[in-house]
Amino acid sequence: MEIKRIMVVGAGFMGSGIAQVMAGAGYDVLLRDIAHAFVAKGMAAIEKNLSGSVAKGKLSETDKKATLGRIITTTELAPAGDCELVIEAIIENKPAKLDLFRQLEEICPPHALFASNTSSIPITELATATNRPDRFAGMHFFSPVPVMKLVEIIRGLKTSDETIRMIKEITDRIGKVGVFVKDGPGFLVNRVNAALRNEVYNCLAEGVATIEDIDKALKFGLGHPMGPFELGDFVGLEIGLAVAETLWENFKDPKWRPALSLRKLVASGDLGRKTGKGWYDYTGGEKKPRTDIHL
Image 1 (cartoon, rainbow, N blue to C red):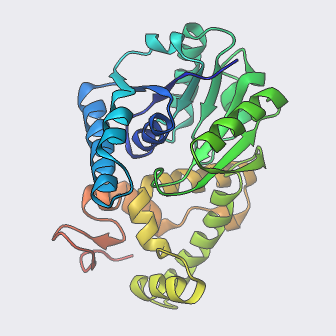
Image 2 (tube, helix red, strand yellow):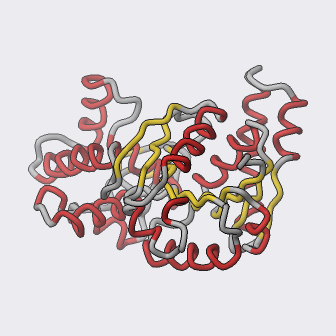
């Protein structure tokens, strides 16, 4: 089977980025979300990214228009029936993902492949919502998708060799570096990163260093492009919490217990850059230390 048309379900930060790289590699893409405002926002982000590449001389205006021309937006799931691959990129919520895949199972032909961009939920569990566990895999991108080169290719318990081969072929075509990962909570990168973050939260709680100095230490001492608190704000604190809760739920090891400080911020609605406040305050247009919280 040749993959020609791909539906990306979820037009948020990750979904729009996935749609952009797929269209840029020549695939016809359907970008779907539940409301016109969401798909419009996703398309605006794609156009902004592409315009930035044109301004930097990395992309021609012709290629920009061609990429945009290969993306169609929709608020319906029915067009997934004409796609060879559906990539799920909705909220990191297991019931929501299971419900989506149940709907897709009713719409899509038996030969279609399903892939999830979940950050932490085991692929084998998500595949139970379908009758095609052999044609179901994890395709975990990293943020921001147009920039980050890695894709974790995750094999569920019943994922076939042919499915993995096709997902790797797509990964290569879009210019990403694919690594093969066995199924499990958090997969590889987020499992390692969650362990680091939890130790960072412990250091903060124990007063070892401030948020700002911890970020500086990991950037200039370990060579990280962003500190853990900056990265958390960039990705969204609710996503970090969802990953931590998945690891805690599955392993029940104290080292995976979500930090109370992270729970407090998410509960208060401070999710990072997207809300103006997270570990840092962005309301003035630039990142500043917070003085209005007591962790």
